[in-house]
Image (cartoon, rainbow, N blue to C red; front, side, top):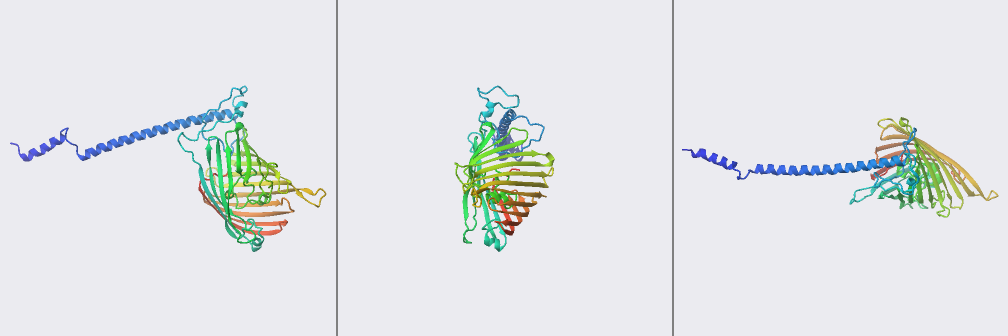
Length: 475
């Protein structure tokens, strides 16, 4: 007869193995985890398929764009042809293939665009998938300067930063908004605030908010032309397009300040078009018509006698020997005294970087201006005379590491209207913990004769920061 103590364990084991018996808790957990793992795998497979599909679409668009470029631009010659960052062009991928019209002339030789293709507006480029919102970039920059000088310069208010001698002041705090409006255009809006020079009273200082830039760029015009309209810094010379916080030194060279003012030609209102020529070597042409609101050089402020500007810029790459940029500019307009003023400019900038790391980095740049201005003069029979004036600057900077740099700038200029001239020498030291933070110290010795009779010694300190997006300056 079976022992009951042995029978009970066998009965429990049989019930646990019976198909209809409930599974233990750990078995249920295992099945749930397996189901969840399978679901995650299916989700990963779906995401991978979406990314692969997106990569195939982008690859196809890139191939389409490359084929259009080969049709629209002649093949480069044997010379160097690597240009610097050019004016804003169309985006990453073409939405519609470039086609010729029925009225186009006979086909051009292979590799050259037909006249019909050149006269047809370029097709826009896709920016995002349907249903996605296009956003713009936002950036904030702050530029703070300290000017130490003598009491005489402070009393006479004839230092580099007139009316702000021996002060710590915000030269420019800027809010920038920029991005694509649609596939056909982009836009830029820059608002800035800075301390204005002192008035009659020493305490007469205020922060002034103004609109520095507000312009629209059209990207798909015929003949490969790009155009801007609105409030802008015109393309003139080497440094006019550079904002205050991106200058190579704390202050602008004396020749630019004497000919155009402390901020050079900022905030001109008008239209400007520029075109990159289809040549083996980079060549950019620009021409514009503006109101002419620069009170130092022009100041008429009327399209009846507009300020007309033009610039030609080219770039040569010498591989391991660096790169050279050359620009020739011209501006002609009516001054506040109703007489014409014409300024011609020639600039050059050379950079050499050590292969590999890019440091040390050596930069040498300069610019020369020649002005022809009609001024009133009762001492001559005609009652007016032509004042021809020269000026220029030259600087060299050596970035021996990514963070530290030393530089030296020399200035020499004649006064645009009055009789007199001045020269200056400015050594400086730069420290950049990162691309978004920079500190500078600069000493400047200036001597002037004639209408600017003075000897000035100044010491500047600068701190600059960047928040958010901030387009880098070219070359």
